[in-house]
Image 1 (spheres, rainbow, N blue to C red):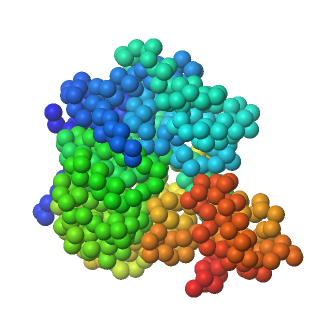
Image 2: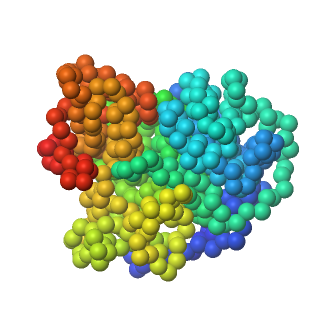
Length: 547
């Protein structure tokens, strides 16, 4: 069986064999659950879809026919609980293998899946329930996570249905048990390719996280991501290191990979250990690998074993810039060149070092032909070669598949990021004479640390709640290992003395009230924050103060 991506796309190449054109073709009712999962299951029922293992040595393999049957049963179970077309369902399943039938089940129902990390705290969860009108939450069974979700649900006017797997928890329905009584076949529910399918919450510099909505065409946009950037292989095994709560999961652990015929490797762990990850690569003979720069740096620090990558044919990275020294060292140890790429939660891959191209170390690569990419100045005029401009996507003629539908309930943000038909990424770059793009930085102040996007406002809104804090501001500062660190400038209440003990207390305070990766690793006490005449914090001045 040829990979399904061949049925949904047409690609063209230049005289050097580099990807130069790409288009998609699909029916108006395209639905990944029916038209990809079920089709593969019918044509190759025993084809491997997921290879899962965890730190304790447990393992499980799922075929496409099992994904088809389980997703049908899950859809039937969710329908019994009143979940239907258009309903928003938050999924917090860590790296549990149950995610890989839950997502197609929600797609088949026409519901909107809202992936979220298990690290969210109570107020994070409460905000998401209310903002997105969450109808149900499906989560991993850990007691701490269930406690947080239960507390958040009790705080809202219309509490969602709560479901978990594997173990019984008070107030939660066991999805896996409810599935057992459901039929393995369901009738196709009518959905449209233009319907909303997926929603991510993404952080900005001001306000709470925005709701990014993708349609049912989004998986098709990831054909380029998987086939031409990650270079997954039909009947291969691809490992992207990502929790299911992040957009990187959609990039590397389900859509494009299955469309291109590759199984996905899922390694469930609580804390990353480079050697353990390399043991997984070696044991399961992973063929393609993608990880954020932070993990490549950790591997370089602990030692890269050539034999662990013996079966790996291609490696890639995205999320932040990767130092050329790490790329050089990795190549020296494995013979593999790390291929960089660039994109967002709002998009599929925008720019990448694609198959057939000669990579330039330090470059993100060239634009994905699915997206009309431009570099523009503040007035949206194109900038010449060598000059820095903002990366934008031209949507004046058509909205490319893979680009989000907009920001739900946020017309101001949608208008700000779509100006005159150009979608603004908020990231800047320059390009060389050969058309390769080089990342420069953010137009705004979003902090990218260890692959996480952290909005300063999210951290500030927690810090300001501490009784010792009168005012605060958060920025990202450069860090070799993590890309950036979260740094907080704190103005204390009158009479409060800034001590190392207080810094530790503030860090713990943040960790306990929001996702742990957001806490400020650096804290500096200052007398006053620099402000404009209108009272706005001058973040550019704070960055200068940090130097």
